[in-house]
Image (cartoon, rainbow, N blue to C red):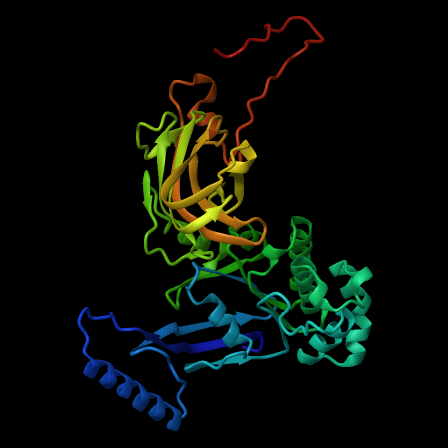
Length: 443
């Protein structure tokens, strides 16, 4: 019992959401005046009773968390996974005491360092040096403790040249590096990290994972939210799946990840209308996708190993978009990106899109081993700045062995831990002694 540092019991968080009523075709002046009067009365009542003012004629109660209970022991590294809107960030905000729960209780033993958003707790007008001391003080550290760790923090973040520059002039990458460095190096017993490492480059992400490994070895507790299943599996011994505000599964990371990934649908056509698990401006949206034969004439439910196939992405552009970029990634069962490609990499420039249309991506020489794979699709509106639409792990497809290829038998391709990508290599042999059979090439 003494080793439990976080205990949540029946944790719930509810919000009130306002909706506009559907406009009736014929609405009289009397109806309008009556509706306005009802809205004013309700607003005054809410104000008197201390309730928040909610815009909209109809009020809906939304449960971001519902009856969540768990315990986390000292030194555990726990991954929290789930789709967008599952309640992950709300849970972290409650654990960090940024927001109060509507019901239930949470006990935290020890100081918690929280990194939920890029630059959380930073003041843009202050320099990097000043923000390190400010953020450390917010986290409850003494000035002497911050001074002792200062050089280590700056070196880890790689901002030595800019430590006396206001952070409003930092790039998003510099911002997140410094924010993570402060949270990871201060002497807090608990570190809570949301999906912010995606902002940093690959070198920095590996550096962060290494730091969290060392923090866990020191006996401190780490709570880590990520959509990257490979990072969760590498870093965490335990994982939790959130779904619709509830804790759906809690157990060993590999078991929980497999359960989570089984929820992704697998079929030849994928419809995305009404899908909430997406991000972007919405100026253009991906409405559906298809898995087709190389010539585009046949729908496929799976593709044969080493045979070309086509992915067709249907879209609706709600306004003209100049020079958009379409892209896709193929991910492993653990969420690792194996293949990433955009139309510009094939030197195909799309000048403008408006209304409905589709783009095709022909995969000529797929080197994916037989198994299950996942799709990530996007439309980039402003390169390196803004997605119009981004769908992460929205569908799955299968690669099957090809019985006509005797040189790539099912048995050989099914070797455990072989990986996901096949290399078509040539091997040669030079015998130094005679008496052996000559080298033969497979038919």
